[in-house]
Image (cartoon, rainbow, N blue to C red):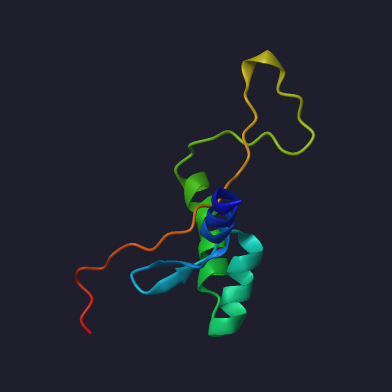
Length: 90
């Protein structure tokens, strides 16, 4: 029971990086945006796929395309993090 309690605490406690709380998933990102009064996480979620498309990293065949043996289907998974800004002046 002790190990289960530790895992529950580990999975549910807030994660902070450089003084900012990080969301664990999309719904938590939207919730943090409402609490903070901004759309920073939502803007990042919308910007990332656009930048990946600009690099032409993947070939999008659209929904319902049967890839056959030549292609591999991938799903998008967002990882939320904050980069340290060494140039930032307080």
